[in-house]
Length: 84
Image (cartoon, rainbow, N blue to C red):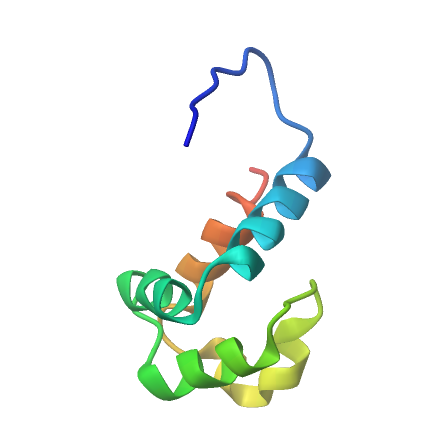
């Protein structure tokens, strides 16, 4: 894997797209590990892995589970930090 250094701001839409492409390209085990590190419950992880490839509306498919612990951290990994 190569590393690059970016100077200047990253367009939020481009960052969001890159996050989803990255997560959708991961093997199942790595995707689950990413969610474990974000404290997403195992049952919710299974549902999210089943929904892949994820698009921005994936949380709607989870229903009330979309508010489970760890989801906010996972969304930040995918989409970047919310604008302040």
